Amino acid sequence: MQLTGHNYIAGVASAEGAETFFSVDPRNKETADLPFHSATAAEVDRAVAAAGAAFAEIRNYSSEQIANFLDEIADQIEALGDDLLHSADRETGLGLPRLTGERVRTTGQFRAFATLLRDGAYLRPIINSEQPEQPSIRQMQFPVGPVAIFAASNFPFAFAVAGGDTASALAAGCPVVVKAHPGHPATSEMFAQALSAAAAAKGFPAGTFSMLQGDGIDVGQWLVANDGIEAVGFTGSLRGGRAIYDAAARRPRPVPVYAEMGSVNPVVITQAALAERAEDIADGLVASITMGTGQFCTNPGLVLLQDSPAAQDFIAAVTEKMSAAPAGVLLNQTIAAGLESAVGQTTASPDISVLTGGEAVADSDFFCFSNTVMRTSAAAIRADDRLQVEHFGPVTLFVVCEDADDLRTTVDALEGNLTSTIHAEANELENISDLLHQLREKAGRVIWNGFPTGVAVVHAMQHGGPYPATTAPGTTSVGMNAIYRFMRPIAFQNVPDALLPDPLKDANPLGIMRLVDDVYTDGAV
Ligand code: NAP
Image (cartoon, rainbow, N blue to C red):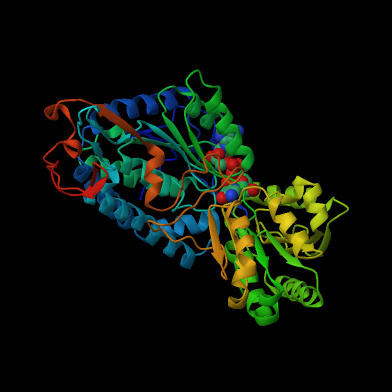
């Protein structure tokens, strides 16, 4: 595939800006030759205007039409072939096995949404028919309009130009303008070509999809400030997500921002679990911390346990395994510098002991940071919120609690996270119930005797959580419910049947499941 280094605005390559940047191979820090053009303010405006024009058309499309478009996108991504894998591997260092799996997940997301749309019940039609003292009220979900998506650095496929946010927004019936991540611009352009080709193949307006390149915050700021954008999806740092959330709130007409940001994913291990399975838990924990060089939003960054000889042995075993594990490749210079700075700030605390690692690997050919284990006390983490900061890499912090009460008080002091995990034994279920439900308050997903990395793309998945994990804890960015970030319910009161959308008509012409007078049915009213 011929790459241009240009933005893709409503299907047309565009490079009006003088500012360029280059893709860098994290394995050898070498810069590629092709310059990528950061979008200008005028190009951002053009992409959003085209998205607005597209919305005027596609908001009338049937679920079946949109489903066919999503299937076509999956096909077009597959048609990119292994060039896509090699491009992403060169730009991220994530390795072909991981990227091969991520591609399956990415195309799978589009096809799963297509299936959801064909079933029709995702529109959530609710009908309360006319009663003597009550009007007819009927509601269903509608797309919100043009959506801005910020691609993540750590998932060049599954959370990027054609990632889950884009898939769920398009599935909702919303045009999308993506701000590509500067860590993988060539891969982003390949996806932009695939999405543009899919729009053309299915006769969708070209403005249904645009992709803007950019290295620096300007492009994103222009995009979020544009009044034509109705919602924003973001995955990345707390600092970036919060800045975008604030920018959207500052607009004369604020819009929702669905930002998935920092998370330390606390893991609690009981004494009974340690007595029974210390070696297995240590192996699983180290594999989870170092998976993908720790660059997962679900990386277990905080481990809480009660002090005991067994706990001391466990911490020593994890430390030994972490220092024996080879240092992995970090995605890019920004991630490497950010990790060094975050760990540096944490280790500056007198309450932190570094058990292994704690610094960048000197003179490495690739971007890397030593596998790091730190330790602190429960009292220290309760006294200083900064010790709960995300260290985005192969890093974990043990929090040693004096006793069960100390542990419970510390769990109460935890910030919001994407996940929380508990390792316990079957014979302590009664004792553990309160603790488990305390952990529930701190996260979007509670894991029993497992590890938080690995997020299944299924209906029941909840990938979200209280701030600072996200800015919208009532939503998920993984799984089919992700679509509702980009839809909103509209109720029709006493509107004549002929004017109602098909899913709300008396006869139920689409034959879809509806809640009619408090009963789920696919029949007519
Ligand atoms: P990032 O710095 O938050 O950037 C993500 C995207 O947002 C980029 O496109 C970036 O644009 C844009 N952006 C950042 N700040 C902005 C602002 N103030 N206004 C407008 N746009 C803005 O994330 P990253 O580059 O992927 O990695 C940096 C750090 O984020 C990591 O070290 C890690 O701590 C964290 N991170 C967390 C997760 C997670 O899932 N929890 C995932 C990835 C990264 P430019 O890059 O063009 O400036």
